[in-house]
Image 1 (cartoon, rainbow, N blue to C red):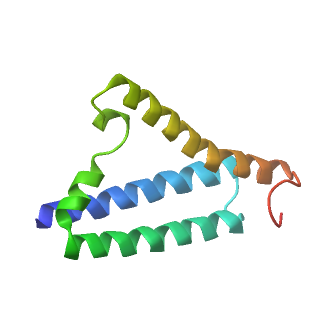
Image 2: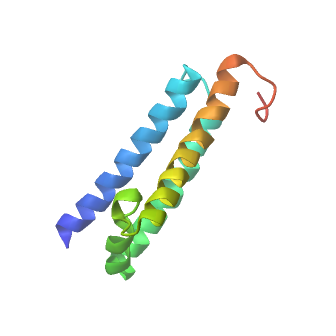
Amino acid sequence: MKNFTVKAYGGFLAVLAAMGAILFLSAWTFNYWQAWVLLLVFCVSWLVLIVYLVKKDPQLLERRMSAGPAAEQRIGQKIVMSLSSLEFIALLVLPALDYRSGGGYACCS
């Protein structure tokens, strides 16, 4: 069980690092406070969830860790999960590009 807990926290850190890289590379600056707020909210939310599931329902956490297109069995589900993953990345990239270009579409820019 201890190995699984390490895997859960390692996966969390990998996703957090990937999100940070996508946000800050797209914005081309670390001076992007909206990205820092997003990462903080994401980090706290996921940590609370992981800590809770490790203590109360580790089997559920283990099942939820195998996600994404590779975890799906049917081709239709693989397509939907692939599109969902691309949409999630776009939700990070597009506002960061807007911030980078100085566009007025981002909140409080």
